[in-house]
Image (tube, rainbow, N blue to C red; front, side, top):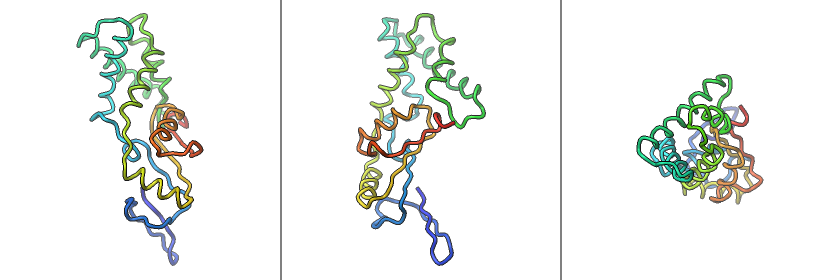
Amino acid sequence: MLGHRKTGGQWLTYGGTPGFFVKREFSVYSFDVYDTCWVRTVARPTDLFLQLAQATLSSQQRPVSPEASFDLYHCRIQAEQQARAMAPEREDITLEAIYQALAPLTADGLDLSLMRSLELQLEAAAIRPITRIKAWIQQLRSQQAQIIFISDMYLPTAFIQQNLVRHGLAAPTDPVYVSGILG
């Protein structure tokens, strides 16, 4: 996060590091969610999709072979790419748009609503808050600063808000803006 302050007719910009802020400089602070407030326990976001494929196949009594898992994994990646290609004017897409694009790519009878639910469960389980940012947010909140969260993500706003609150990063009333929803 960067801070901006007007001093003596000039705007000063400096990097925001939690240990450097001893007093509140601004009335509103915004934090990006992914890779700022929290990280995932996987190296790449798409790594969750292999876990998702295996969990989906297993929960629907289908063979969980490497071939079937990788096929569904690749279908999930392809569906996201197709959803983005179908909405080039949007900054981001929604999870719903991804699953609409996924339907024609998957085997008949695959319960995509269950798969979508499993994706949210796996995503929630993979989230780990960044301790220094959490402490900084708590410090700012104790100084009556307004905190805003932003994310360039396709996941639902309610999901992101719920997990920010669950990990002690956000208050239930903090604004959360998600590009997939806002477009």
